[in-house]
Length: 368
Image 1 (cartoon, rainbow, N blue to C red):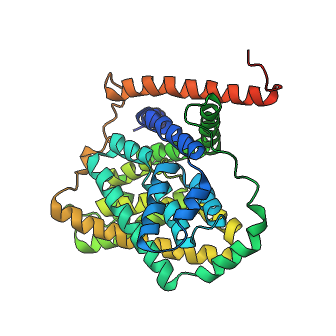
Image 2: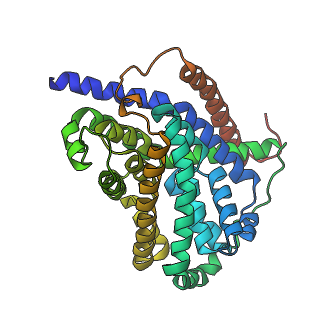
Image 3: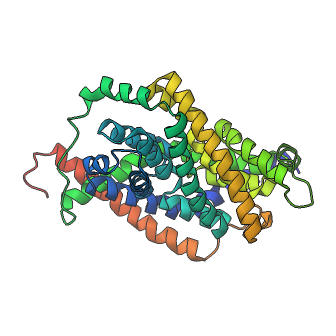
């Protein structure tokens, strides 16, 4: 295969991945903006004040309905922690906001199939439980408390009134959040999809098959374990954000990674290099390393358990079933109509956010 046709293939794959996930991103960020605008954060902190199961469950629920990208999730998790949430609950909130969010489910479904959606959410609940347990058993909880005491001064200012669901200003605010979220992370998503597209076309299958011990005769327990261990480490160096790493996971699944290894890889977005730098900025080097170790071990166990259980249930799809291998992305199917609908929704939200900035710049009395 010559270089020109490989470059063409790469561009086509990249465009196809964007086409597959566009509507899911608009829907997800739209929901995120609405939640951030209409649910007050201090309520979140009140219901996540300790690390008991009910509090952890609520943290998971709030996380799942709130955010999108891992970077935004880390920032929200910190603000909830500084407002009085227990650190374990804040970590669980972050895991859920990265890996149990609705748009991730949509993107997984559109690229990899329903089995991955079920595994992502069932595994996510296990991942959260393990992380909360490890935080309680070996976690540096006191050290985090000291960080909060040191920073307590900064947090009082940003608690604004929560607008009414029927107010134009409220929706304009939600729209600005939507645009802000997009502007913050569109680069990560682009990098993720471009890297994934390039890897699909340029990295030979034999490399992945070797790395993931993929033989021809089904997946054995040792391979499941090794893939769960290696999966998140591949994520660490491919540095993509939670939604951006689904195309990459699809590429790896095509390349021979086990089902649970692919799931562990998707969870790995919590410990990619840029995220580790964010933790370090927030909490210092030592706490960053301890948090990363706890998350990593929880991911490995979760990936392995998911693999064993789903294999036993017969719910592991064949690699051929994922969308990346077949290169026909564009058709007049439900993806096309969803993209049209959410293209319009995105345009309306963008227009609304423009109104918000204009009325903020203008004197505020008369809207033309």
